[in-house]
Length: 340
Image 1 (tube, helix red, strand yellow):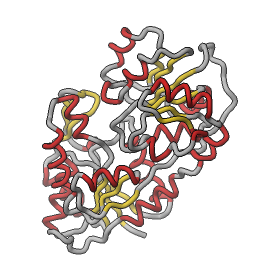
Image 2 (cartoon, rainbow, N blue to C red):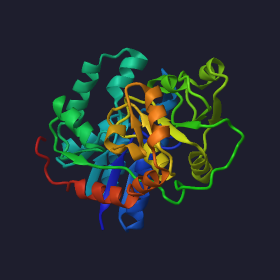
Image 3 (tube, rainbow, N blue to C red):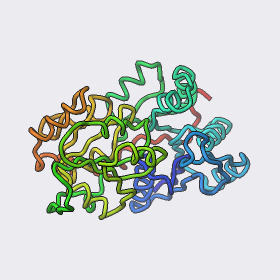
């Protein structure tokens, strides 16, 4: 059994696919007998992100982080995010001449461009520098790998897919909550960079349900009073919302995967999305939904052609066990790294 250290700047109480992936992977590894230490931001002082107060920026003292890593005596180090903790653990690994792995979860260049007007070129240069000495950079999909290679990322790129809790996300008998049908569902952060505006402005019949919260919720509730904002739902309550809807709409153009897409499929819910990284890798058949540069057309096609049985079968193929096996196989031993 291995001693595995994971460094991440994204952790509870944040609610997103990155946290869900890391938390579930760490829990599965422990169930298999591995010893896992997660270096995460709740143990250190933090301040809210200026343009995104729901997400804190930690500012740990380097010595505290170094001592924690060294005292754990890891066999493997994985750096999951490019924030303050990721930078400090990366720095320590290079000082110690340790090999380490990284993962690419979030399109920060696109988000920073939209939210703070930071040119994408600057952000991508930083990311290439950050991941450069990694023994393996883990990504969720083939199309993301192809894109990053095209942008000049040079570490070996390995696949690390995502999973679904099939005890929660499964087909159920539809519950009639009194909403006009079809019920179109969005689950995720309620913020403009997620493309939620594209969903809400669709001129489609039925009801738009929004599960989640975020900085744009108050203004969007006023702008779209006909939409139903449910706030956060977790566990079985979230599974029931998925299973009672008629279609899942994923309007983001910037996610690297979209865990919510496979949660929807596992619930027997077809998906309408743009033909971008993530959905394009998952929705490979008309039975699973539809992809279109016109989101309204994708909704119409998905409602007409999708097969809920096929959706559930596809979603069930994404297991956290397989995801965790991929992660384990990608880890590097702490021998001298090739560029230190």
